[in-house]
Amino acid sequence: MRELTITLLLTAATLGFGQSFNAESFPNPSGPGSIQPNLSAAPDGSVVLSWVEPAKGGAFSLRYAVRHESKWSEPHTVAAQRHFFRHPAEMPEVVALNDHMWLAHWVEMPKEGSEAEYVYVSCSTDGVHWTEPVIAHKDRAEVEHGLVSMAASGPNEVSLMWLHTPEGEDGPGYLMRTIVNASTGKEIKEERIDSDVCACCPTAIAKTPRGLLVAYRDHTPEDIRDISVVRFENGRWSEPKNVNPDNWKLNACPTNAAALSAKGDRVALAWYTGSPSPRVEVVFSFDGGTTFSKPVVVSTGRSFGYTSVAMNQDGSAIVSWLEQGGTAGARVLARNVTQAGPKGPAITVAEGGRMGLGYPKLVESAEGTFITWCDSKTSKVLTARLNK
Image (cartoon, rainbow, N blue to C red; front, side, top):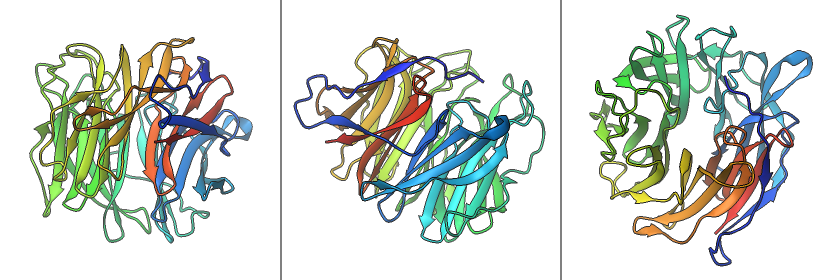
């Protein structure tokens, strides 16, 4: 686990994007020392911000608040006194499926110094009272289970995509799916989707009218680590399909993968690659991820990746990523992009250390487009609205 210790400076400066696209920062109710922020959009158009923050006695809690009509609710606690794995890429998530169905997932590391990591879920009927957390997979071996993404996949069910490394980091990683009952959190089904994936790069999932679309960093015996997608349509998984032949050969795990966002059949997929140079790319699909456009490069300099993407109603997308630069060494940048290319230069959302910024996340809702990240200078999760 790497600590979030390097300071950053929040800015909302544009880099020549005209007057329309800018970042407007605003406060949120996360507590001191908060980390691992995430965002989701509720069915009523409100925004759910979740985070992990320290509690009394050195323990940690998973908390969240809802932003509706420019106002935040009081923070609620999903789970307390838990051994959360506090790595920037292992972000818990809180999702409102409807007014009476909430689900949360996170990863715990019960033993410091051990590779044992377990995925937990909890559910709620009111967003206030949560069920006792349960492990979301059958395997209980002291190996890594994590890097979860989640989406509703049917009436009263949710699909969790996650990675399993039964032989540790030196062995193959599996892309797994667990279906859980959204009312109880109990496992319904578990299956393996791909038997050789990059073992420490996050998964991403989106739901389209055609079914589920999952993006992840794949792996070959030759150590090529490009982005692949699989689709679940008509009760079956498609074969993995490479999004673009970057041919990134790496004998290591970059902890840096893809991001997905969908509006109906329109999909945006953004990712980081180190080949032939470090950069962030985005592709679009208008058939639920069956086919994709040619990649558009969105990064402006030496990119660090850690991408997020939010699909706009007009078919364009906003992409965020980390890039070298700024007074503390790294910047959170965001850009509005179409299939034809960027609509203008990037804007700087925040500056800081590469690890101190965490893994910024975007979400598009009826309330607008929002981004969240970590600020180790104030030891707090920060938020901004991206005004197009």
